[in-house]
Length: 387
Image (cartoon, rainbow, N blue to C red):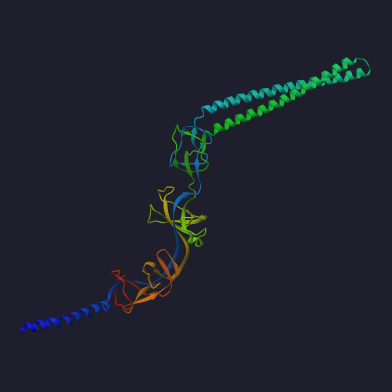
């Protein structure tokens, strides 16, 4: 009998226990406060930025090469050296060119002597022609007075023709000699210029960032020997998404963060915009000039650039990471008399980590998120345990 009573008690007594457990679960889910962290909404400043990634480049750079073929004799600078304008960077072996210059000078001297000689011949031919003309005019008068025969006057005419031909030949010789002198002078100038081209100078003051040749190497026109850059204006060539094109314009302020110093930013300014978009990445180039550089830097090093496109002060701001999407709308949970209350938001300017709140929050409101990162529903009791 006793066993029967105990069995019935166990059979029916478990249901109240289950009900108690269910009641405790419902109470915990509905009425037990959830631990949350809160952020008091405040007013502040917000800056909207466009971000892009690029590389450090020099606005002015040139490849130092030779105008002529030759063997490098001396290299006077090295990678990392600063050079001044017209400073000698290297020289080529010039022994053969010096011989060609001496030959050209000798040819010029001979051509000059030839001009002097043919000019003397022309002067002599002119004197002879003048004398022959005077004699011919006298013979013409004598022939008119029949003092000489026709044979003598014919002989006088032939002599005059020969004298005129000699003068014409002398003039032609002078013209040819002068042309030869010009050719000789141009040849000398050409070889002197080639000799001068064996000495290669810096076209502007700057920094040697690369050396591609060694002494004894044979170079040809156009082959790279050094890469020279001007450090007066350095900029980062940044790739920016084409959707941001309308927001970017020359003169805007920017922050440059080099990957070698991720915790420091350098001031910059938008210098110019590219006018061609990459057809695959849908990005366009923006050149941002940098006012200062890290202690150690290199052309081609990567950097992130943040271009300031807008700025507002004394507005309601909120960290963007706190905003939640619910049914296609943006909003947050706020603490209201110990309960979680949903607030839809109207968002304005978007910054890097914060957004401007146009409507939905006021200074002093407490935006909350659960400590354990689990989502909670509207009206749930909350207890703020941190900020």
